[in-house]
Structure formats: C-alpha cells, structure tokens
Image 1 (spheres, helix red, strand yellow):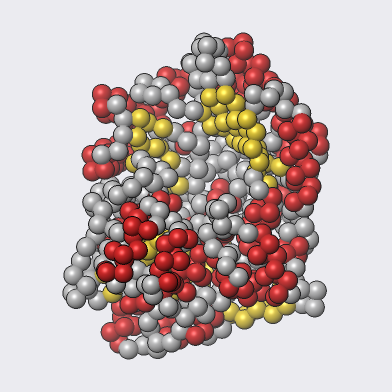
Image 2: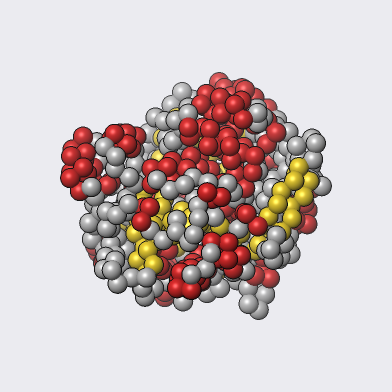
Length: 611
C-alpha cells in the first residue's frame, strides 16, 4: 500500500493531507493494544483538524490504556479517484492501515451536508454500508456530534449514536466493547448492552411506523431499550480533559491557531439556534484554568494567534480578567488574541482597547434581522441603538472593517423586515462617517444573509421553510435596496439550505435517498466544487420521497417528530412557550437575568445552572 500511496501523492492537490506524521500525533505499538478506533471526520483534513471536538476525543481515547485511536479524513475528489483506480482503501493517518482492520469506526458529524461523506467513507473502506449487513463485533460503526440529535436519516448505516458530550461516555463505550471482545459477545448482545449507557441510541432497537399521510405514527423501543435517550454532558469543565499538547498540522488548516473553549452553553436563547439549546446548561471554565491551558497550548503549538471560543464569548463572566492575563503573555510575543461570537449589546470600549493591543482584526456581528419587531420575535435581545453604539465605538477605535450576518426566511418575516436590513446598513454607514477616526482607508461593510433552516430542538422546529424561489426574491429585494454600491453583499445558496432542512428534520425514509445520491456521485456536498442539486433531486425522485414533506409542509404541534426519542434536557413545553412568544414578538430575558425553566438544569448535579 505504501508504494501505491507514494505513486499517487505527487498527482493530487495538497498531498500533505494524506501522509500523517505530524508533531504531536499519537503512535502506539498496534501489537500491544487491545482496541483500535478509526476516528473519522467526514470532510477534508483542513476542516477536520480545525474541529475542537475531534481533538478532545482523540486525546480522550488515546489516554486510555490499551486503546489506539487514529484519524481518518475524507479525501478530496482527485485523491478518491486515484485511490479507487489503484485499489487503495481508505486508511488511517497514524499507521496507514486500512479502516476495515479497526475494531470500531467512529464518526463525528457536525454538518448535515457531510452525510454523503459518511457513506462514501464507508464504501471506500470496504465496510458493509448497512448496519444490518455487518456481523460479529468487527466493523462496529458509531457516531456523535451536533447532527446526531436527529439520528434518523443515518439510522440504516450507523450501529449506534453517542448523543451529547463524549468525554465521559466514550470511555464507557470503549470499555464495554473491550469486555464484549474478551468475552466473545455477539453483535446483538453488545448493542443491547451499549443501549443501556446513558446517552447512547441504538436505531435497530426502535421500530418506526407511519400514518397513511406520511407522518410518524409510533416509535416502539425493543429489547429493553430506553423509551427516551438523554444527552450526556460534562459536569465540570475545569477537571475535564482539554488537550494542550495536540497535533500540529503539516499544512495550513481552516482555523490555523490555538483554540481555547471558555465555556459551554449560552445564556441567550435565540429561537432559531439549535446549539443554543442543545449545549445547555451553561458551564464555564475558570480564568485560572483557561490561562494555564492557553499558555501550554501556545507553547506546544507555536501558534501566533489564539481564539477564545464559545457560543457567545463576550457573555463569559471572567472575560476582562482573562483578557488581561492573556494579553500580559500575548502582547510581548506578538500573539494575536481574537474573540469571535461578540454581541453588539456588550461590546465595550474597554474590551476594544484590550483587543487592539496586538493587531486589529475585522469585527463580526450577527443582528440576524433588520427590524426590532423581528429581532424580538427571534429573541435576539439586541436593539438597533446598541448595534449603532457598538459600531461607533469600533469606528472611533480605528476599525474600518465590519461583517454583518442576517437570515432571510425567518418565521413572521415580511418585506418590511427585509428592507429593514438595508436601512440598518445605511445607519451603520452613516455612523462610520460620523465617528471614524481613520477615514483615509475607507470603510468595508460586508453583509451576508443565510437561508433560515428550521432545526430540531428549537422553538422553530415545527416551522415551514419558505421556498428557494421566495428566498431568492427576498435576497434580490435586499440587494436592489442596499444604500451603497460599495457594500459587499452575499447570500447563501438556496438549494443547499433547502437540502440541509430536509436532512436536519428527516426520518428513516431518507436512508435510501442518501444511498441513491451517493450511488449517483454525491460527495463533499458542503463544497461548491462538488455539490449538485440535480443529483439530489434525481435521488428523491428515484426513491419516491418528496423533500417538501420536510420543508415547506412544516410540522404539526401535536405531531410525533422523528427526533422525539432523543432529549437534550430542554422540555417541549419550554419550546412551545418560546414559539408562542415569537408570534407575539415578545422577548424572553437571558438566563443570567432570570431562569426561564427550560429544564436543562436537571442534567446538573445539584440542579443549579451556572449562567
């Protein structure tokens, strides 16, 4: 296989993606380990190596005695074609061994458009595609990540899903598998046993039946499987494993910097945001822990930039203290400190002065909607004046580059709301003219709109998605009314977002569609170079599945939903209350102002959320 790889690599783009050997990778003697895990990321190397969850779980598994976890990434099209032409199966980077030789094959899935990559990677591995066709304990395929809160579209292909945070559940799963391997269990025995681990969902242990109108009629647990699977969470992030001695990539990756996770969860409750609900409850790390982890990470990696990340970093209580401590270390060494996920309602002059000590990077804000009525409907809890005041602070401080993100197609949106985006951009442009301290360079305002995708476990999970044609009409309306030709405006592809909605809210009947799409050549769907909407339309038609059933139809409030077997800890009653408030354009205070009784605090020992 080595000779084939050496022959192939000079012929493909970015061969460094496929060779491994990086500083910091984990190498073990495969003859001395009991359990080997192929940890698969269903996208390219530069995307996967930027994924924090993969780095954490790679370290968690390799800290276990007798376990060797190796990385596997989806090849780019040229490499896949060369592998197929030369009979080279998908392999792990550390050892170069084929994926088919590993005990467990684990996927982390964070984006619906990577589903075809999951299937394609299994095909490239020579592993039976359907879970029902895999026998014995070998080739046990499981998956975790943000997308498995609705696991049903992949139910035909994955043996079991790990729902929620995996730092503690993954070792439990691996230890159970090791026991099963030692004692010679059958596959069905192992699956029944692993279903008893909190947070594990085994699709084959649930029977789904449908009504005549296509809606889900019932879900019946089998063989002692729990009626509902509740996600796992880490109770104390200060004591949780966080790798500061991670792998240093051989080639440039998307987020080529150190990444410091300051907290999990979000206090805000934006009604469109799946992560804001599924990552509850709020759990911060202490500034002392973060400072230590940051310095260790920077010294081990040699990076010249570090990002303080979370769903809303500026809501981290200890941010001023942490920023000061970090800058004492970073400024003399010319290391840039960046804070994504800033909010317009708590960006201060003090924070701005801290950020610009090393280097000014562009500022990014997400008002999401152009009018106050719609911002209230989605519970964004930010006013136009707060947005303008924030921009004024930034422009006075020398910033001239602002990115603004909005959504089109939100529930209750009208043309007035669409035009409100243009009006808000005009007010920001006017604010620059009045407050900029550096007008020689001019201003750069970049506006981007996404096509709203209703996601499970949000107050909008029941909503209709507008048609792609209507989305494009609204995008053109906005473009035609932008206040200046100098404003850069981009909008997301409508076809891609429609398909994302289908996969996000789909059920088991999408399994044959996924398989047919892959058979017709679908792969790397998150990349413009490869995405073919027509391929998907042909697959839906061939399988007799109407995508509108999952998009423009919407879901009934009393309808059994495909993901109702899973619980993220937030009650359905909370989601319904928030939906009703949305239609009244009524806001809900953030978790720090008042507890709204979502129910996620019940996942914590002691039941108290640290918002």
